[in-house]
Amino acid sequence: MEEDFLIECIENETENSYYDFKKDIYDFSIQKNKEDFLVDVISFANNHSKGNKYIITGVKLHEDNSRTLDGITESKIKDGADYQSLVNDNIEPNVIVDFKIVDYNRKKFGVLRVNDENNNPPYFLSKQYGSLPKGFIKIRKGQKNEFVTRRDFDLFYNEKTNNEMSNICLKGIVNKNISDTFKIERFQNKIDFEKCKNKIYELFTEINEIELERSLKSGLKFGSELYVDQEDIDIIRKYSQKNNIILKDDFFDIGYITFFSILNSSTNYYGTESEKKKYKLICDLSEMISIFEGYKKFYDSIDRISYTELAIQNKGRKFDEDIEVTLKLKKDNLFNYNDFPIPSEDIIGDVIDGEFIGKYLEIEKNSEINEYTGKYIRNIPSIPRPIKLPTWGYSDPSYES
View (cartoon, rainbow, N blue to C red):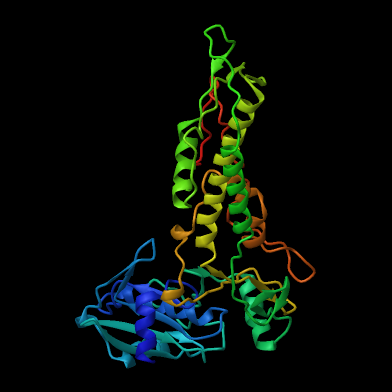
């Protein structure tokens, strides 16, 4: 057993059909520990997955897959021949088990390997041992040792006769079709940022050039006086300063325009046409800047992320319900879910309902690929951008949800 490989397993592997972790090595002075050892060996030997299986002792795995590496109690260590002897005396057909001590961080870890050459299942107890009856049999499925089912016996037979075997393989998806290769891609920005900046600049210019025809300010004037929202002012000023755009002194002056509205009804504005036009353009400008900044921040982060599309394919003649896929990524290439950029309130509805979710987080069904059901973002209502209007009873929609 290569020591570098085993250290990598100690540091990073999780429990599955190939690996089991124990806080300490089996204590053969206790009968129950010997029984547990035999159950684990039988279970791994009967596992349908091909390849070596490992029982790694001295590692305590926590629910979040973090681990405590305390090592094993050296007084409990037995010679490799003792483990093999216990197996030979109680399991049939014969199972080959290797044992190795790994020294790591000044601690010792015991690794038992159930070899891939154990390819003559089913394996079971040849006689009663302690509380385990003669004929006792289990199988490793995922993270658990489970009792063998009728279907498992059918699979044991099919594996020996090569009759109607399933043939599971992991494939890549290239141009929406199954491929033997994996295509690594980057998320692509769908927004023409230069065109957006030009449109924003045009709005700045148009507002600066408006010659305001002011209506009269009067206490008898119908409705409530309208002001440019402070949030809009801050958004526009910040953008103009960052992009060296000069605002006229009266840029936010909209005269004495008033409005009147009743809840759940249309709003009426009272003022000159230039006042109404300027107010509308300022609102449009603030909204366009917010959307532009939201997309810029989102896609600047997205563009740095690589992804690939995968599918599981069964090329055999037998249905297989117990499929386990393990993807191994180098640490430097791991992308943390919590680092995934969250769209701003101004664009989240478009990101959820638009092309992004469907294009990147779902795999389309076609002649080669059956329907894919993901656990990603689904059925989330779009969140409309709040109308910049001071009406009674208005409250911001919930963005956090």
